[in-house]
Image 1 (tube, protein in one colour):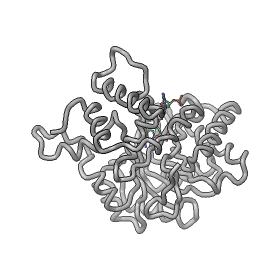
Image 2 (image 1 turned 180 degrees about the vertical axis):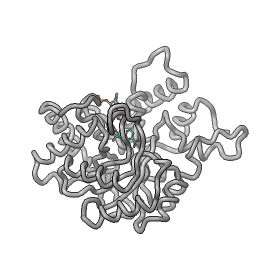
Image 3 (image 1 turned 30 degrees about the vertical axis):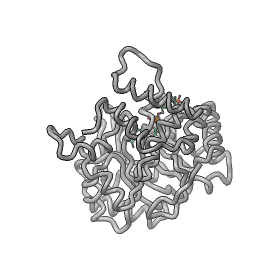
Length: 326
Ligand SMILES: NC(=O)c1ccc[n+]([C@@H]2O[C@H](COP(=O)([O-])OP(=O)(O)OC[C@H]3O[C@@H](n4cnc5c(N)ncnc54)[C@H](OP(=O)(O)O)[C@@H]3O)[C@@H](O)[C@H]2O)c1
């Protein structure tokens, strides 16, 4: 798999990142099992074999189990830590997490960022977090507090770089003004079935102008300032590959059919073609794949072999949006 140096860092990363949200099974509270660690270990070893070295987490994934499981995998393999990049996220409370009846909400307070990052470090057993992301914009964010928390985490050696997730360009630019170091990542939902980032470019000056919420100038901000755009749910949580059904909207059906036929022409798996659609974008989008099954990890890893032409890229987008270019 191709590697690249993440802009504004010294991190040599695989072109695809491995999302760890699937470790630990369901999201109910409770400890993880040995079987879950064994399964995650098989997935991580397969991913490393296929060239992945970037692992994406969040404190909330499977209610902290995903991080704990990954920490155990690292413990089982001394030496693995130095071969991988560990990213995690903070800033979300799940419903009932704070106390029974508390709502799901966001918290970018200094105290919460510090507590969450220290909790992740303890679970991941990785010595330091390479990149810490703020998970979802908190309307109550006080940027000076975020800056203070980041400075403490950096000074104590707990976190090397910082980034954001689900931020618009304007939100990232606003926070950046309070930080001494550049934000290095913005992780957004992007896929053939969630193509708002492309739509934001196409829809300018159209009537009516269906500019997707928050996406205006987001890609441009990230490209201009060197934030790596990471695509979460790059396969639309598996929907692109799902079996055909009568309920499937016509545009999704057309796009999925085209993905399959392009894959068959190339003798490659459809997962590779769907991911290649993101790789073809000049922003160097880094898809964060989410499968934990070995055969699918291998299928995703072949995305770099696809090589889409401009015409093929547009044909896929036109099929997915269900209408031609303006
Ligand atoms: N920043 C955020 O707000 C945010 C939100 C969501 C996710 N994320 C990150 O993004 C990562 C990826 O998200 P995702 O899991 O939705 O990504 P995805 O790669 O679009 O989907 C993977 C999911 O689809 C299933 N799937 C079904 N058929 C599949 C196929 N043919 N090929 C591949 N997968 C198939 C997988 O199940 P199997 O495991 O059984 O294959 C897995 O649950 C997460 O792990 C997490 O790190 C971030």
